[in-house]
Length: 341
Ligand SMILES: Nc1ncnc2c1ncn2[C@@H]1O[C@H](COP(=O)(O)OP(=O)(O)OP(=O)(O)O)[C@@H](O)[C@H]1O
Image (tube, rainbow, N blue to C red; front, side, top):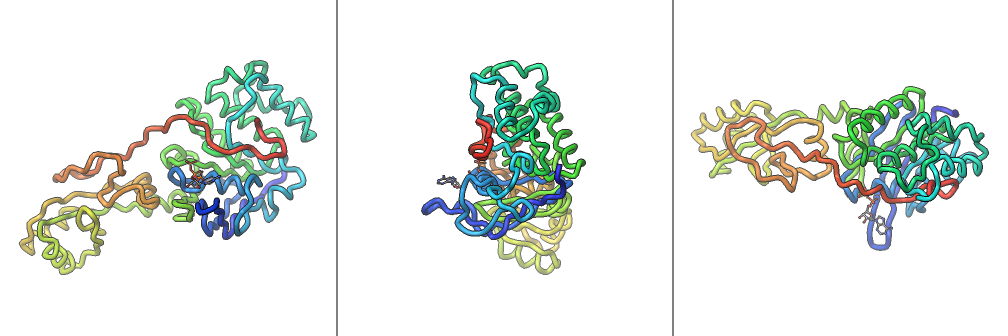
C-alpha cells in the first residue's frame, strides 16, 4: 500500500446545462483520518465524487489524489478504492464478481477470498449476488474497494441500508483503515449516521462549502442559545440591547447568544416587556449541522417537524428526525477502469 495520499479538491465547479451542481468547492482530505462528506440531498456530494473519480469532467477546477487526477493514476485500483453504488450483475457470484476485476487489474486471485473474509462474506462467496440483501451488497462493494489494497477510499453512503450490527461493523472497519494511515472519505446526508465514525467533516449545501474541520469544531459551533419573542418586538429589542445581550432577529423571535433563558427573561421583566415565548434552543451536533446546511429554521426545528410549542420547557424544539432514509442505493457508477457492475 502506498500511503499518505491526500484528496485535494480545488475551485471545483460542475454545471449540467443551467444547473450548477457544485460551485467553487475547495477542501482537502487527510490520510490517517476518516472524513465525513456531508450535505442534504441534492447538495452536490455525488457530483463531487464522480468528478473526483473521473466519471464527470469538471467545468472548472481540479479534484486529485495527491496532485494526480484519477484518470492519470498509473494503478487506479491499487491507489483508490471507490464505491459509488452497490450495483452488481445479479447472476454472478460474489467471488466471480471480484475475480473479474482482480484479473483485469493484475491482482492475484487469492486476494478475492481474503477481501471477502475481511468484509464478513467469506461463506457467501459462491452465492449469486442477486439474492444478496442491501447490507450484503454494501459489504461486497467494500470488498471490491479493498481488492487493490489502496491508500485511499472514496465511499458514497456506505452506511445506507445497514442494520445496527452492520453499522457497528462498518465503524470499526473505517476506523481500522484510517489507523493504517489510509485516507477515507465517506459521504452521507445524515451527520447522525456517521458522527461516531468520522474525525473530520466537509459539509456542503447547494453545491458550496459551508464548513470544513474536525468533528469537535462542529461541536463548538453548537453552543446553546435562547429564543425569545414578545407581542412588542421593538420593546424587546430595546431591553435586550440595554442588557448587553447579543441577538439576531429570526422568524420566531430573537435568537440570543445566551444559554440561560432565565437571564433573558429577567432582562425582559426588568424592562416591563411582556413575553410570548422563551426557551432554550437545542444544542448539539445535529442541530449545528442542520443550521449550517439551512435545513433548520430559527426555532431549531427541522422543516417537516411540528411547530415548536412555546412554553417554559427547556429544550423546547423537538429532536430532529434521525430516521434513516429509504434504502435506495446511491447514484453513480464506479470508475470505468474496473468499476463494480
Ligand atoms: N447529470 C445531471 N444532469 C443534471 N443535473 C444533475 C445531474 N447530476 C446531478 N444533477 C443536479 O445537481 C445537483 C446535485 O446533485 P448530487 O446528486 O450531486 O447531490 P447529492 O448531494 O449527491 O444528493 P443525494 O444525497 O440526493 O445523492 C442536484 O440539483 C441534481 O439534480
